[in-house]
Image 1 (tube, rainbow, N blue to C red):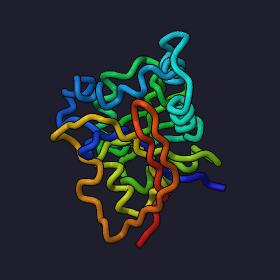
Image 2 (image 1 turned 120 degrees about the vertical axis):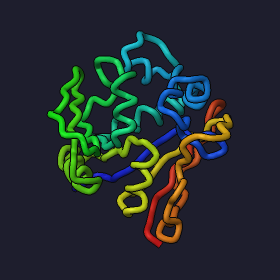
Image 3 (image 1 turned 90 degrees about the horizontal axis):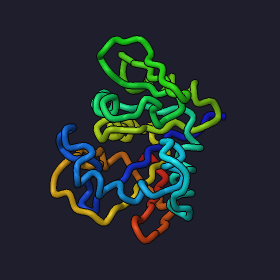
Image 4 (image 1 turned 90 degrees about the vertical axis):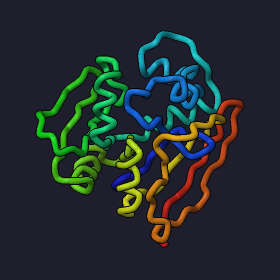
Length: 206
């Protein structure tokens, strides 16, 4: 049985998931947005940053996100930014399908990540990701425009937001351009921790 299609992102209180310019990634605002992740034991293990780190509910939810994922899909903008910043052992450890017009052979990285470049749109990319994931879930990794395309196409089953207590003022809005007339949400989980509030919603067509 095929798994779910989902996305999970950190979001500022004013609705932004990334700075407006790729050059600002890893800058002060982005670091503040993601600050809940960096101390976690599973994050440290996954990026091979050494032993130690915090356990608890944040760590459990972060780990569950990656353990449920059998394949990921992302847009070219996210891939271009990540290609410059990811370590040699990219942090996915699954097949990743990049929606792009660029024709390129698969890029194999240590640790189980292989990037496949899909030139015929979001639905063929999702079909290939589903096949690769088997019974596990497919994560739409980003960026915001790619997430929105899948949401508006009715292909998202659920999503989780880690709501961080920071304000951006500008940048990439998660729901900018959403077809709200076609998307209905059902609250599923709400978990608060000292650093962030985790919100999960099931997605249905109106």
